[in-house]
Image 1 (cartoon, protein in one colour):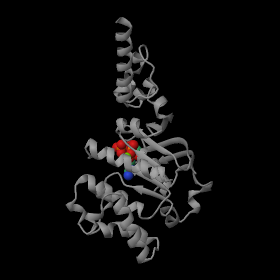
Image 2 (spheres, helix red, strand yellow; image 1 turned 90 degrees about the vertical axis):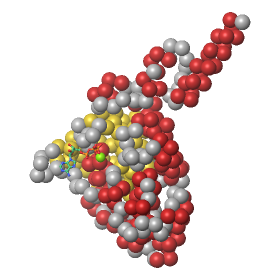
Image 3 (cartoon, protein in one colour; image 1 turned 30 degrees about the horizontal axis):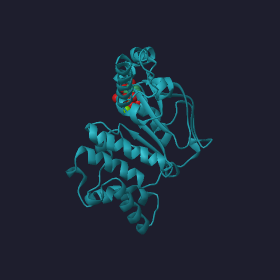
Image 4 (cartoon, helix red, strand yellow; image 1 turned 180 degrees about the horizontal axis):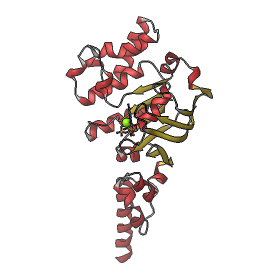
Amino acid sequence: MIEVKNLWYVYQPSGVVALRDVNLKIRDGEFLAIVGHNGSGKTTLVKHFVGLLKPTKGQVLIDGRDIREYKISQLAGRIGYVFQNPDHQIFAESVREEMSFGPRNLGFSEKRIKEVVEEVAKTLGLYEFLDEAPYNLSRGQRQKVAVASILTMQPSVLIVDEPTTGLDWRESIQMMELLKKLQKEGKTVIVITHNMKVVAQFVERVVVMARGQILIDGQTREAFLKFETLKNAHIIPPTSYLLQPYLSKFINVDDFTIEKISAELIKKLRREKHANS
Ligand SMILES: Nc1ncnc2c1ncn2[C@@H]1O[C@H](COP(=O)(O)OP(=O)(O)OP(=O)(O)O)[C@@H](O)[C@H]1O
Ligand SMILES: [Mg+2]
């Protein structure tokens, strides 16, 4: 449903070439991560999906139609983009106001706005904070407010730029579980992240970018074993993947979580003990 064809983007007036001939297809209902070193072009790429940037060369198609044929309001109701830093997005006096802004702009009735705001607030655990000022909340809660304010527009595609930056591990897991839940409910979810552990744990498909290009696009469990290419993109996969070439001599793992690896190792040790006794 989102298709990128030979996309180039050059920032002006600096002339920085941020995207170089990028090709990508994202299907309905996918959970996809875009990873890459600072400045590799991740944010520049997704800003094209919501019309915030226009291709210098090439095309972005939404449901087969060139994005230039859509009005910004049509796109906003379809594809939601949560900014890299929640504090660049949040501006209202209260959480409720912040969450009402998008749907009000899209012309939802006040009754519908109230319903949708309260429903989303409940799902995200923000209900009790609806009348709070966003700047009184923690970084993790503000991140949720940023996501919530986009979800109230009920987009079918949700793009979240760095959803776990500034969050601790427990909050990061909560955020990722929330995104996974939204995907299970039928949304397409695209996350941009520097956190390879959460990618390994939650995301099926990963796109690795470097210097404005896509170096790898595939299933996470295959992508994270391409050590040479990852090194070239300055990405270090989770330890469980780095250990795989050694571990595969002893055990058969198809799931590179520490839990699975430990379980397999314990099984093997038990079998050996049993055979020796
Ligand atoms: N507004 C801008 N004007 C000029 N150059 C820019 C602008 N925004 C980004 N760039 C440049 O474009 C390139 C890609 O930047 P982009 O922000 O897309 O990278 P990113 O992968 O999102 O990085 P990060 O992980 O740091 O968020 C970088 O070289 C960056 O310096
Ligand atoms: Mg970025």
